[in-house]
Amino acid sequence: MSLGAATAQRIAAAARTLAAGGLVCFPTETMYGIAADIRRRDALERLVALKGRAEMAPFGLIVSRPEQAEALAAAWPDAAEALAAEHWPGPLTLVVPARSDLPPCLIGPGGVGMRQSSHPWAAALARDVGGPITATSANPTGQPAAMNVAQAQAYFGDHIDVYLDAGSAAQATPSTVVEISAAGDLRVLRAGAIDIEPPGT
Image 1 (cartoon, one colour):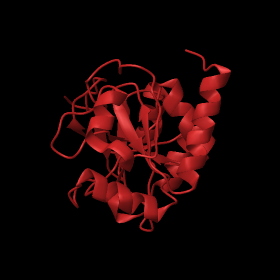
Image 2 (tube, one colour):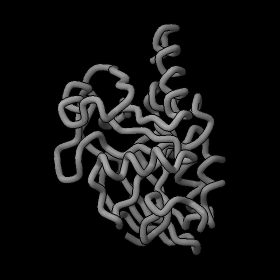
Image 3 (spheres, rainbow, N blue to C red):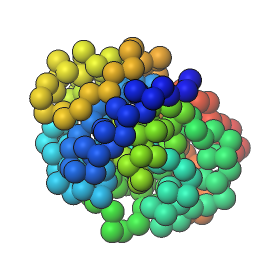
Image 4 (cartoon, rainbow, N blue to C red):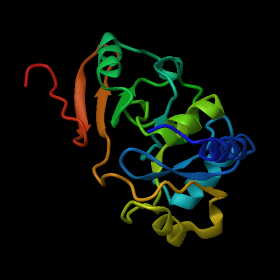
C-alpha cells in the first residue's frame, strides 16, 4: 500500500507535531496507537498521564530501521538480529536490555520493547520523525484498544493533537512480544500476531 501525496503530507505534518512535543494517534498493522517522540520528555509525561499508565508497564516503541533499535539497546544479541531480520517489518516486539539513560516509562523489567511496523502510515511517521516513537495502544489502561479513529477520539478527544485516520485497523491481535536476554535467551511474554517458538520447545 503506497502513500499518496496528500497522505504523505498529513504524516509529515504529524511528525512535526511530534517533534514539537505533541501526541499523535496513528494506525498500525494491529490497532491504533499513540505516538510521542521519545526525545521529548514533556510529551512522554503527557502520555503517561493520558494513559493512566502503571509504573511497571513501559511503552513499546516503533523504529524506522533496525539500527535505531540497536542504538537504544545495552545489548543486541544475535537472536535479536535474527528475529528482526526474519520478522521486521511486522507485528513482533523485541524486548532487549535497555540503555540506562532512556526515560523510565520506556524501560520494563526485561528492558526496552521495540518493533519495526509493516503499516505504511506507521512506518512513514517513524521515518519522518527521524527517531523512535511510542506505539502504545490508543486506549486508557484497562479499556479495549481503539480499532478506528472514532473510538480513539471517544477516549481522548482534544488531549490528542493529531488523529491520522486510515480507516479501521486490520486486526485486534496485538504484536507478539519476545524478551531476549543479553546472553540471547528467548522468552515469549505475549503471544500475538506472529508465532515464535523459543529454542528447545
